[in-house]
Image (cartoon, rainbow, N blue to C red):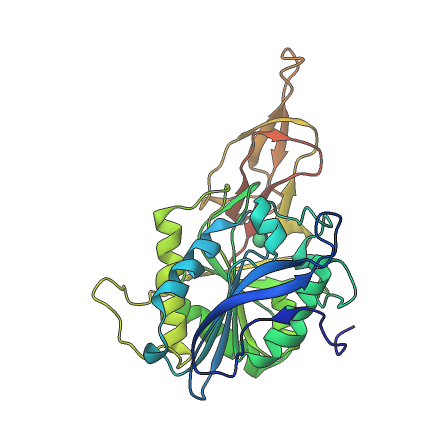
Length: 336
Ligand code: CA
């Protein structure tokens, strides 16, 4: 589908200098609005030729930290502070972000499993296609700000993906180290090519994602990681020219970890109420009890223990105590 032109109209011209704000108009002809369009906010800040960055959030609509960080950056960033261009897409899957849901209520689609999208598909497919075929080819750098959303909570983390292109992989690593989140992950996602970071690497764009917390919240700590990280990353790209303010901390080396394969996820084996026995940031051992699943409807029965299969680091946990069989309880990392 890539190569076919998008039906989405952008109100702003990315080639013009200055700060321009407006909407992507996504055609959405529905009962209440026959020739209507959905307004996806987009911002371009440009000052002459130079490197170009695409900064995105709201790929999953219930991940709020990145949306707030990019709204703040939108108001703060002025053309005189930069060289080149910054394109900001803070609510990439706008219908999902507006609803505060991971997936779009219009087509029940998870944008991050839809790349490269489809110009003739559903709203989410059209948006993924626009990012892949219009925005990414115009970018040298790409940061997609995620978090744990409603169901998960992450330690603040930056992630890059293993790439066959050694030079691109090196530049992705340098970008992440400039962003300098407390934790850094090398993702081994096998053949999963439907995500934004896969799309970024397909376009040979230096790409990273973040996981900034979650639980459907915004916290000062996670926002600081995002705010400072974005500024350090924009400086690293050669885009942000303004020198760091007095409250901007220098980059510290992150804790490097690795995530990959089926063993990186620990799932609920039954339905019930989950009692965790570990916390985020714990190093755990193979065979150690991760938690117990209780069934208070038959409280005289013993709970079912869930155990870790290997020595690992607890990077991400499920938020809700209520679980169904197949729910992800923990995402696990290992030493790099
Ligand atoms: Ca996400």
